[in-house]
Length: 326
Ligand code: RRO
Image (cartoon, rainbow, N blue to C red; front, top):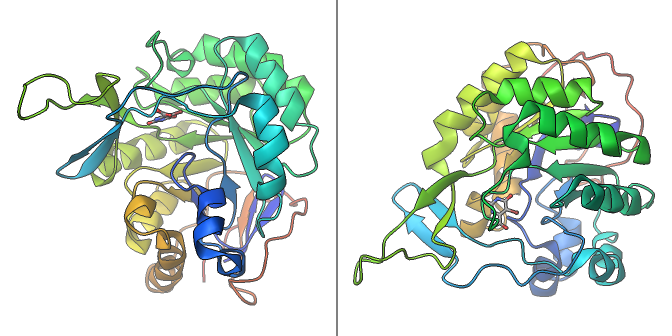
């Protein structure tokens, strides 16, 4: 299932959703076995901001009947700490590294894109314009014009692929995707979480320290499917589809709806090896129900050639947009 995504050659279409798999902690826990059997074909980092952040006060998680509400609040070491401590560790991973960045102003994002966009360890950048857990409550990616202005500002700063992570809360996510494309984005990823809330049973007061949080997991899968299909039908850009993927069938559904890659998120909290399982299930499901040719240029999925365990190589794709799923 070799995939060519924006010039990155990946062993399969299955990657992780930002912030849902801590590769550095997993390396400490599983040792070199993690490198030999890395569960995803590319690794997407947790969001990095310019300055270090503590994140939101606890509690930060609430399990709902079919999902998870998080109010993590972007804890991270900031650009400097990330470059010094995390980037060298992540450069050891056997798959391409996609760094997810977020800023509170366009200038902040520009500094981050410039810094990561010139590093050999980084294969691509994901612009997070969709975090639901910031104090201002403002989400840049809800507005097509704001999103376009951001992409236009940072596009000249790197030759690496720029993926824009969309919010499901935009009135018209396809309009935001179209604006991102016009401004020079190479791909979009969707969906981020949906704002939700839970009350503590004992007090009737909000459970989460951040009061509200982002809902993920199977509860949002139908929304993801609908939004991916809508963006795919209106915008000619490769899509990373995500939202409640738990099985190869779920992944296949997103691919059939127009995604070129699929990201596994909440399921990795339950099973850190979920990516590997879903990759195997997808291969099997794809044999039974082949994916129709894509409507999107810039992505190629080829027949299985060789071991799924072999490290992904980075090569430029031919952008032919042909896809055969066998
Ligand atoms: O850190 C978070 O609270 C968070 C982020 Br950056 C995001 O993009 N989506 C989410 O559900 N939580």
